[in-house]
Image (cartoon, rainbow, N blue to C red; front, side):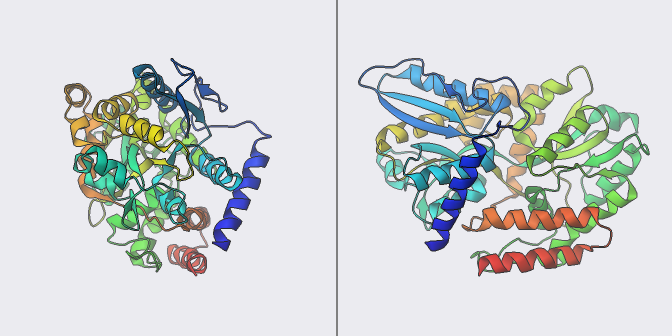
Length: 438
């Protein structure tokens, strides 16, 4: 609990200092949510219960959240949801921690799935089990791979909201010109071969990916390894399987067929996106969550394709995105639960997926006529859903938010420094991670 209090204090200081600067969301687009503005409720009454909902999305995803809130507020007169954009996942995480420390948390918020444990461990998340059981919510309707990061200590503390897997994006026009199969590479070695064929020295790279913990997790899983032991007490990526992704990336970067996008955290994602759409790279790893916007952006430029992440020993991906949670200190829990139940229902889940590219979080959402038609017309949307068969949970220990920062720092140092081997990088990262665990 002492550590938790220290973290809360740090988060509060970080958030207070951040308030003096302009917020810069990922891929900013004009949206009423930008800068923390609230989505206006469409109906209010003097007797309506007002709940606060904080979310971490800008651009297309942010507009989708605003539309969901508008629809909910218009659908009834008992509850008014006030939605506030709080920055990206990292910023929202810090602000929610700060609000908890200050005793003024929102009623409902969105939490990146690997951070669920950090909030659930000290008891700041409401157990949704009794609500689900009372109201007869069918949890089996949610895809099993998406429920793996919804439980803590045997209790249901979160439900899938905007969920994703990493996928391969490809400039299919470029692949066809190079005489490559437009279905894309199936293995790491095929990815290397495709990248060589697409590369034009000093002008174009075949492949790019942010050196991000999410993609590293995927490649470790594909190599037969794991990040932590199943009980979360031991570091397990200090292994040949943990070193394999770093070696693979380093070799392609040094050969000149992979571009390392500079920048920290989501800034690197933005650079990768920019290079991809400027056709300076032919393939990239990114989230299915941006698929709708990327398809629109590619129109008139090139044919955009999607595929599974190429495998090493096996196919495997971590799920990603975020879950929706109810804060245990909320004084309006029934109203907050009604909103959570509504926004995760079949119709809303299907609408969210079609609007953004995030996964339809339930079987019933995927089976709606509208969603089936979308899969038929735009097969790129089907890829991430099919890839769920190979989904793995992300680590959820309370310290993982800090641990992933340590790991990413060592990964990034290794890929740009020829003097640091893959084995040295994982050993250094593991030593720091083990210290944090202790």
